[in-house]
Length: 406
Image 1 (cartoon, rainbow, N blue to C red):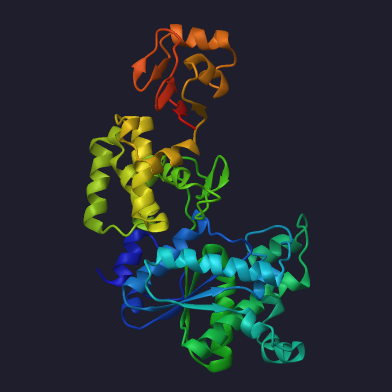
Image 2 (image 1 turned 90 degrees about the vertical axis):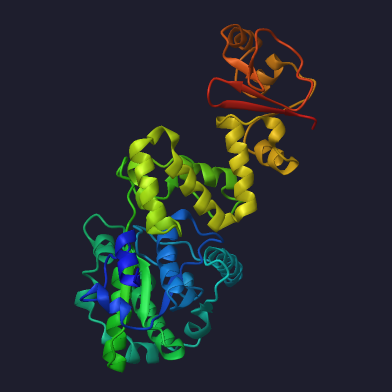
């Protein structure tokens, strides 16, 4: 499958400067993808763009990751209706290294160039910038950009000159990377289309050459119509200290049937034959959720590695499948202990239910036991008893309490 065929099949062929997709198969690209260092972790909303970049990398093209240490001081107004908080240089430096590590994991250790636009923007003089860059941009075109028009419109919150200048700086970045690294392609999220065009046009005017740009599609959850990337608890982060590996796995596991195939194409490295087979599984045996389990396994492995993924799979199978708690390793138990309430061996079932907030009182706990709603290690409880070993107490379908030594 050629690059253009793969991008179209996976749903990546979105906004682009190409007249024909086949142009992608005729050239050699050095492309860049920029990320805002406003935090020290990417979230799943960033993944579509990075997986699109990964396709280029796998097809032999070069990749530059730009961390916007310079533009991050100002903040990208795209996709926002208010001003961003400004970060210190120390915060940006920390975030830059954390983001680079996450991208390296996503690219499976394949080589890419890491740059920080602070390295060149810090030396730019205002008068030179206005003369050499600013004069190539039309104000009438800039104020028509969607995100700027929204901010300065009747009900907008306004926009500072600092944020208004962001698109010029991003265009300057593209030119700098064209000059220093031969970059001839920029990829970004769909909200970056205007900024990408700024660079394309600036290089055309300044250098008289053509460069290109593409955006990853905006991913929409088909069953809810909402923008992809949020859970009930907020953003789903790639940093396991912000979103645990277990929670990350569950996010993908809970994908609806309608979106599962699209997500497999966009967020995994599985080929067409494998994904077509999973599409048939959804149609023929949706209750087995084979596609969702494959999606969760593939994406979690890509982000967190095979060992941690296998651990959360075992934990998930104990909680919601047919495996028993004695099949878990000590490391698995630690994973489980961070996700559900914990009681100490020697406690009674009733006390554990109350302490784990599965029951509001001892009386309610007794009624749950009498109703057959409580099990210990898969065995229905008919009366209160002391839990004397490593155990899993379950109330109903989704409320669990781990009982362990300490």
